[in-house]
Length: 282
Image (cartoon, rainbow, N blue to C red; front, side, top):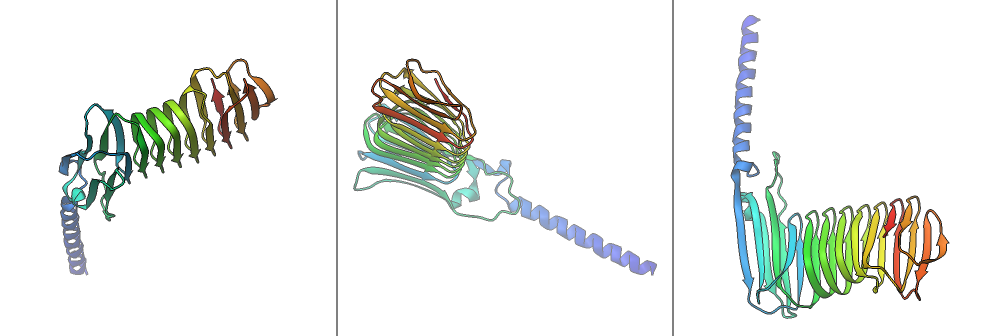
C-alpha cells in the first residue's frame, strides 16, 4: 500500500512538471508581453489631392490635425507585438471621388494568456482647406482632432472618448454610446446622439446655427464665446437639473426639468434633451 502511494505521488509530480513546462512554453510563445512589443512607425505621404477623409478603426486611437504641408500624411505609430502586426490591416488610398480612405483593423485572435496589446494610434495630417466631407469612426479607440474645416463631418465611437478642438463647416454630427465628449470652438450646425456619454464641455463660437443634443444619462455643459442675441432654448431633463445663466432671456417655461426661452426673434434653436442627466447653459 505504501509503494502504491509512492507511485501515485511520483506520477502526480511528473504530471505537474509536464503541465508546468507546457504552461511555460505557451507563455513564451505569447506575443502580448511588454518585453515582446515592437515600435511601430509606418508613415505614408499622400501625393494625390484630396477632397475629404473617411477613417475607420476598431481599437486604435485616432488623431487628426491640420498641416501646412501641401500633401496629407498618414502615420500608424505606437508599439505592438510582432505577431499582432502580422494580423493588422492598415490601408490608405485616395478614391476616384477624391476621398482619402484610411482603415486600421486587426483580425480576431484567441489568446488564452492576454496581458495587454501595447498601444497604437493612427495620425492624419491634413493640408489646411475646407473639405467636402470628413468621417471618423472608432469602436473603442479615442478620437482627437483640432481645427477641422469641412462642409459635412461625422464622428462616431462606441466606447471611445471624443475631443474636438475647433470645427468650422455647415454640419457636424457626433454619435457615441458610452464615450464622453469635449467639443470646443464649434462653428456649424451640431447634432449629438449619446446613450450614457457626457458632453463635458461644448463651447460654441456663437449661437447662429441649430444645435440638437440627445443623451439618455449623460450630463450636458454648454457655453458660448459670444452670448446669443437671436436664439431659442428648449431644454428638457426627466430627472436631472437645469441651470441657465444667459442674460436677457424671455421665458415661456421655467421649471426644474423644463426650460423654454427666447432671446431676440429666436431664429437659432438650441435643443437639449436628456433622461437623467443635468443640463448647464452658461
